[in-house]
Length: 359
Image (cartoon, rainbow, N blue to C red; front, side):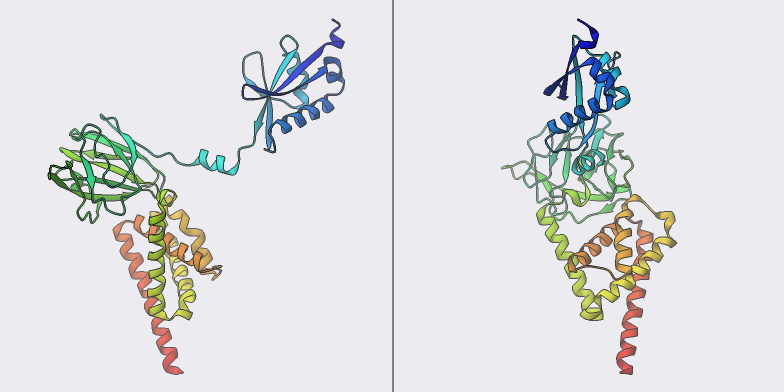
């Protein structure tokens, strides 16, 4: 057959599935490259059913995907096999897909043991090699991700935690087999009646609980002594249950109520504005302590300092974010922040008292 009249079947694929095809004369493609490319691009857009076309690719003679453009149309056609050329339509990722792809991964491993992830809930199986269960789980642990291993964790081993910045990392243990957790300088939580038990036997052991905030970097948690316990991670507010979200709203609401009782309801927004201004000053003064966990507070602080909150919901969100960030700070810095903000509040109250006296 005359090469000028050779017909090439061009198939438009998504992955390995052929979605459409069009036949073109090789000679016409060479003479009308721009038009040929436009037709192919339109066909590729159609097979995506409304999704945005990112690019079209073809496979070169080395097996690599190359991007199709007007300049490479003829090269692509020259690579056709038995009169067939496969083109691949690649869609532009949606914002949700991009967010998911860029989300930091939560991963917890142990230097010797295999761990399995499970949602922390009342009455769940405690360890992979025992039928014991957890009871009276503290509210803050519920909904977190438990990384379940064996009942006895070997001495001189470690957990390696990779979690998004701001995640809360929990470790817990029996009182006398605590793996050395009590010596790591972690924040101790009120575990109340948290325990593991053998159901129906009446046998149970109380558990202690500690936590710290992830910086976003890999964290190594040493097990220096015999350990009966475990590890769990709550990855920030993205995995917070509805119950916990309500609890956060209630906490922020109580903060507003206390503020209103102190300065008067009409002065709450003005007071928040002053506190936000002080917060920005503190960020600047202590930038050497800055971590990724503080980033979510920057925009709300500027918004509050400018007095541009749109509604009560934004105010409550700001207060909760401020509380979350405060909890990630070293204890020494927490004391500085608390003292400074209390001083600002006292000044506001004193000014109000003076104004009332003058009136």
